[in-house]
Length: 488
Image (cartoon, rainbow, N blue to C red; front, side, top):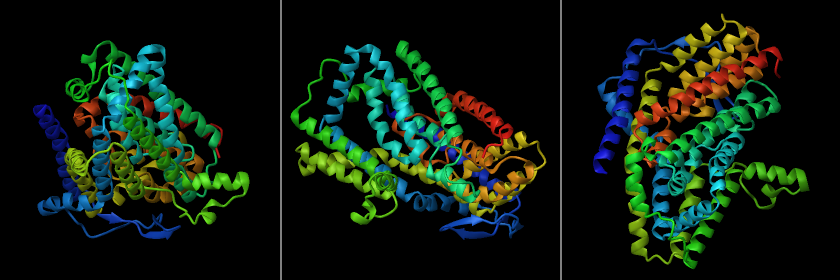
């Protein structure tokens, strides 16, 4: 097992370091430049037409050495989030509740084998809806350690257990119809009515989600038939031994039932916390009750800090219900934290890539070059080029809202000049700025997701490339109808 982990760390770490060195080299080649920024609705947005060269800032060796440390500061909230997830899940796992629950679920699916094939479509649809509506991203990480053993118990593999929450939320995020972090912000900057164009976006979501379900189902059937075809075959051998999964041990003790109930209610509470603004608005429209005012709630929904705090509380409750002594709780918690340490360090180096590009002032220059080339193309081709521009920017800025405030102030007026609607430009931003998130090493969520299953980054990239190719070709096709129907 140690040899496998060493190989994984070498592959992923080597690739991140290579990209880091390449980006640093670009700061010596690409001219430095910057747009002016202005505050709009509390966000720093670039001002179109204000690009100008700035003093060159090539990044040297010492800058490279500092960047991972700076990366830790930038990704601190995600790193703490992951460490707490690891600790809490280790506590819940030590109570035996997760294993017992998974064995019971596995026994149910073995009694009704035809229902086993609903595991993939139902899982993908649920997570895709979460990504499409409220922009689930980091939250999907919580479910990966739960879906991995569940997938293994059904005869699948850890890659599928990772893919259902991670890719499921990813496809919903990319093909979203009310995601506030992409559709909402982009439409606001482009001065398009909020969540307009919903009908066509729902069609896009349904098509893209169906493609992902089909792709993962084909892979799952292949692995179920021949486990050696699995992306995580060696890891799964050890994981099955660790979990001690079998079909006979399905009895759940009363204590474990209470732990599972508490954990399940905690997940429901988490979703309510994330969706708090939308739920309160829905209740106010339906019954005229202003819960925000009545309960004195904050207007914003939960994000990383609140979710991590809630999850930590779940861990304490589950430890208490599992009658764990303080020493047992402490040992289990810090075992889980230590298991996440390697992923946390990789996140620091992944964030260093973005820091080097920003400090070298090359991102705005690249945006200026590419946006200038787009305006000379046919409208349909221009929408495709705008989508690919978002893909390039996505490598350096995985954040959906970050890309929106950087690119949409420039691309929205450009849409008027090239003959496509601003709604179409928002769609190009949405599609082009999301698919790559499922594979880029600069996205901390991607590194964390594949880290749970100890999937080497080159393996994950190779496995995902066919799906990405299909999704990009599909996105090109989906950008054609808006031009002919003058989509508003």
